[in-house]
Length: 352
Ligand SMILES: Cc1cc2nc3c(=O)[nH]c(=O)nc-3n(C[C@H](O)[C@H](O)[C@H](O)COP(=O)(O)O)c2cc1C
Image (tube, rainbow, N blue to C red; front, top):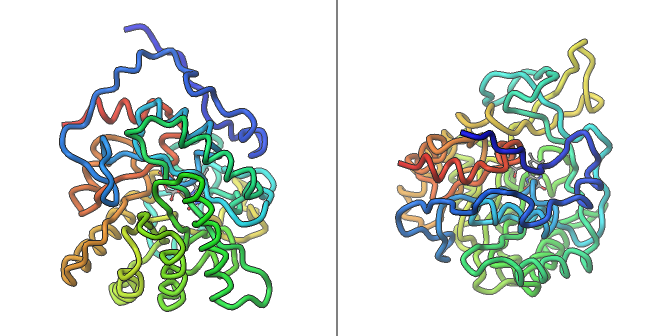
């Protein structure tokens, strides 16, 4: 069988700005695009869709990246988290491959490794283009995207010193309303970013505030499906409180954003000035599927119709099936799809 040429992908040796400007053309791949279908009737937050496969918030820096991965067989495209004001990316390195076993609660420090083996520390700080740029980009992306693909836009509030929760909620809601008026099919509000220390990154650990912010976003977007992205939780009581706070206003929960820990260089010195960073990729699969199973059980017990989106470490048809078996309704991928842009095609070919 002839070896297929590698496809363009995010270059982690280059800056975020460079990758933003150098998105591949939507048809920048020589493959014949006959990607098999996954049998069955699928929906995403109540909207019909061809498969449970999507790209998580992160790899799709702008509309051109969304269109590229849509052509490669992903059916839900999550536009990387946007803000109400422009924000630069953290300095490089933004992606540091790490060598680590499966991670769980309070993991020990992880060690950088020279080769990517499936997991990396992620350090972007949720950069964003200015709203007038991303709003126009979303508008043009939705126009160009095939009708059977869904565009989900991830938003986050940008907390200012001295702000109340209500002010933060208004900022989230403003971004969500702009995204919807630009054509977003779905809104994902990021309530967990392990790489920012302000409360916008930790809302999932504060159920009452999380509920207020989610309700404000709901009020701003009408009937558009709303997903809340949460971080790593292992305690039943905390999970139950979060469900109770979010259920009245939310369509689905996406989990797990990543698992935060300290990253060390091979010489033992700390990366990122000793601050924690979110580890993404294979090392999070076991913990994230356990979290999905726990939430699924809790949702069943309280008769909730909230959907679950499995995120973290999925890299094969078996991994996707593992999430679905534990109660996820859809599975979104970041790391494995960045490394292998043909991933959706491979998963669909291997589907049993
Ligand atoms: C390069 C990169 C950038 C990311 N940026 C965001 C982001 O802006 N917003 C967000 O909610 N999650 C972000 N994430 C987290 C992913 O959405 C996802 O939760 C995490 O990577 C776990 O999935 P994975 O193991 O398939 O990578 C990012 C992840 C990566 C790898």
